Image (cartoon, rainbow, N blue to C red; front, side):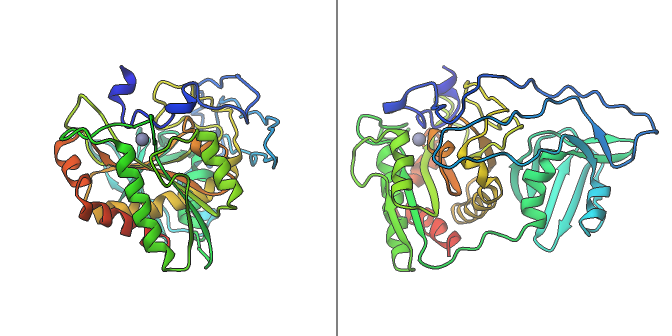
Length: 364
Ligand SMILES: [Zn+2]
């Protein structure tokens, strides 16, 4: 039932039913959610507060290329102090109610953080942090991993640059007996719309010097691991999996979601009932910075072109097509086939062309 209620319920269906692939992780150790045990004493240095969160373990991995997580920052850090250290203007309190919120800017853009909320915004786009910022001694404090994995890639790092002659692998979700979800209005399957979307993107990008390969070009199913292997075999620089969503029987929920892999040490935005081991570290975690930047670019472009509601850039670690990728990889849920208004749009070729143009434009 949970699956029915929580969106495109088929990302991991078909040849690889649950549980999601774990071949790169050799542990079942669960890192418990952080228990805040900070010392509010004024004796502590003002810039950082140590919490009792367990460090993510470094696990051996069996992928062809070994990757190690960078040393995580396991402290809560004053955003004021962090801004000074990174030569940014001090964060500005922009509202007091219903909760206090702060903005911090660089020449790349502006992030808005809310006290007590994992939801944040980047240049007007919704995104999701690992941990909710907190107030300590009248200052906003942000968890170190969020600084490292969410703030720095957007505020400090140079944006993702695409050279020419790049290889993109598009992954039209589902196929064959693995039909995905279905249209509320006429029962057509998700697998049909994802393939059409991918083909349209391929046509648009091929004329712009990109080499675009589709994991499937007809109505056939492909195991999730084979979709990853396909990207590997084609030396893909980037990977995008295309899906449409469902919240059936809820007909109200709508909007765009863009996913990338959760960095080690953080809880995911969405788990869909799967275990979410914070300590897990996958090959694709080597691209945490690029994953977020890539997701932001795609999400912004598709959101603006489609006019859909913004359900945010999100994190998940149960999506089998993302974990083993050795390149930036993103999964887009391009709208809800269970929502009356949205399913009508998705059924229109004109709208799907808009979605395709958005993805193509984001890559130029
Ligand atoms: Zn799907």
